[in-house]
Length: 301
View (cartoon, rainbow, N blue to C red):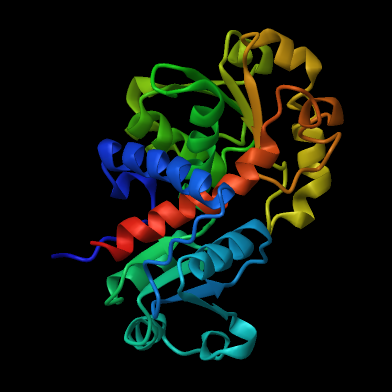
């Protein structure tokens, strides 16, 4: 059987993704009940980090430990990754010694190259192009609070970045409609947008995009590697804050999400992220459960 990788949400079918979020909910319940479930004793996850991380590292490392396995933290500072070894060579060596690999890096082409040369499954734990693991947790969180996300309206406010790209893919795969509200000049990749067809609407007005929405989500204005653009982006995104006025335009039962870390009073008002519609802490915890479901799926192929 061919090796399955998870580089974008398009790598799994809609049915497989739906099964994953349902399984994640089961794993959450099991963990909260204190049930011991260790199907992967002796299995090893290699975690390659070229970008800093809190939620990604803690969730993957904890998840593998709860499964009875082990996780190795690898960074360019203390491996040959930072000394010029060709990536295909690194992929062949690491994958010959471990059972599964996750990578958090910059260019999406890097995870594609690694996967093409790996003998074990590879997970994209974030690139500049996509953040699919976060979307598994986001959909799981919506389902936890409101039921199926299929047929709902989701509004993404902010930069057309990796989170936006993964929300575009999620709209297609999970069957919801996505409104994107972004400043002119900060739109998502045109090809990714086109691939979603009429599942996505692109707007430049936040209130119109949020009207009647079931979920409002956002991300930081300047992602990792864009810190030198902070001042420029603050000016461009000044009217793209998720605040109480914006939430009032959404459905009365709308939820608020943020992938974190959040810059309060920039992309989101403190009153929103700390408010009764916010589910960001469940969303953050669900990174653990969603990724455990993903690890289980890939290791059982």
